[in-house]
Amino acid sequence: MREMDMLELLNEIRTGMANLDRRGLMLRLQSPGEPFTAWVFREDDSFGVAVPVPEQVCVSERFAGARLVTVDRTVSGIPWHLLRLESSCYALRNEFAVVCAQMVDPGPEGVSRIALVSDPRGWWENWRQLLGNAVVNVTAYSVLGEMLALKHLLETGIQPAWKGPAAASVDIETPGSDYEVKSTLTRYDMRVHIAGQFQLASTTDRKLFLVHQRFEPSPEGASVDAVAEHLVALGMKRERLEQLLELCDLEPGNSARYETYKLLDSRSFAVDSDFPRITPESFVTGALPAGIVRLEYVVDLSGLGHTRFCRT
Image (cartoon, rainbow, N blue to C red; front, side, top):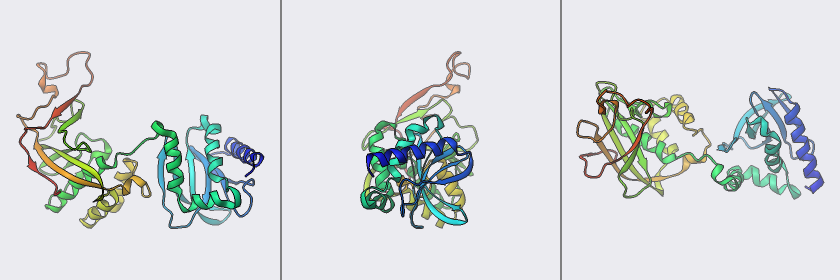
């Protein structure tokens, strides 16, 4: 588009964002011209732009204050599969509109729209790199570590409950034991960060174990998406599993779900009287000293007794 055309598109998007209400209305943009269909929308607390994409395209990516996602919507009685760039930061809608205009701009002879539809994650990755440190990165290997521990327990006949995504006191609960899972990409360091005085404080009669898993990125490794299929095959309900992954910002279509990591080492440590930890019971009064509301510390697992856990 020419500079004047791009300015017209930007103004059209800004006007739509400012005037649409929250009822899920979609206003077709005129500036891109035919056949490059695009809309500006506002739906509940979200607003942004949308373009049609083929049914098989599935995307769910997040970056600072924004989301790129595929959805199904009906516009004027016609069903569409849409790629939406959306945000809920309404105070920054004018700034966000600049990115929206770049997305829906078809470019000369439609080359930009063709590139967007054929590789939406590539378009996202370019903006992700531009945003730099503002991007929220999902640590897929951390979620993968919990999922592999879950898979191991299911394969041994134990019925585990995955609690980690809901920020419970432990990551996995079973009838007889609880498991806290720590994952790292550091090849040799055996130190783990304990976030709070209650993380290794057992609140039940069940035994508590800390599972330490070391990964490295590898094309021959496992992915969140692949292990999810194994968990479903082992009897976990897909709907519940997807709900838990969504709590981890790993909805279907998120590229982090396909990142592959090789499990180098998996060890289980019994968190008992010999395990170095700080809990409220570590203090004379049975509680943190007055004025201290939270503590965090690092435990070196080197030299501690352990057993092998997941297969590597």
